[in-house]
Image (cartoon, rainbow, N blue to C red; front, side, top):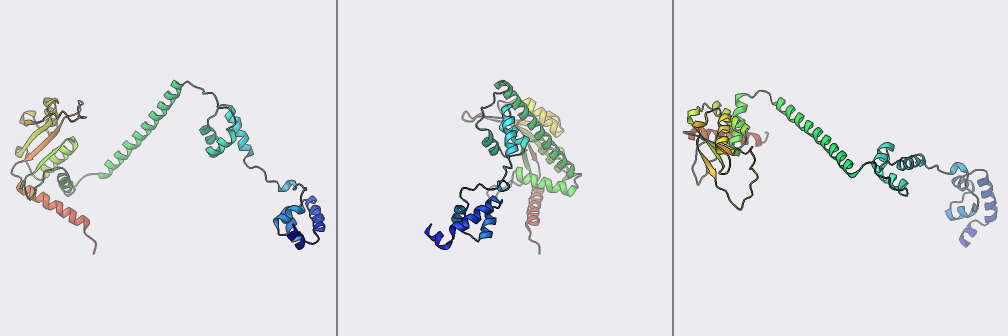
Length: 286
């Protein structure tokens, strides 16, 4: 303290004044400003032994929350319930009540599982409703399709799913296969737009050999709006013992293949239209 005493030669006099100010209810900052003592260590020594005035003691803002949290914990509330009730963080709840015994569960493990499953079921039902509503709103937003819009949709669909001509294999013919009944319906409607009559179509089911072939043919005939007798003989897929099949349920009906006879010109129009769609979509503005 030699340095402090050299700077504040009348240390005892300062201390007497500091104690008087302290007892008068001054804070350390007020004493510092009054005595012009800016060394924290010296300032502390000047008031050593003198308690701070009550008004300078900062109240614990969360004391009421802490007391309430402990009360709720003793009533058997969980951390999550206390957090939701008091609007504080879970870490604060844990700090306040961690010395209290863990509350006894109010229900059996079976009841807990039942509650959890009920909650999950309610959540999934809510998600399903939201999913259905989103799809319904999107479907309603489409409205009526013009012939041009249907033509563009059919071209994009065919280019994604239909057979295509290759430089090494000239196959300029419309041939389409899919397992989605709605995709098949749209493609058939697109062919009608192109004035393709049903007598130009060859329809054939492609399905695994272990499936119910006759039932699948009746199903696809109904989708296509024809009698099952007009379908060509089904193409059966041989079973590969190394493959684990997942499409073994009753809803498995294979695919419907649609072949358009004398369709080379239609194929060229479709391919040209597709490149026109791509060119228009990616064209940079002037």
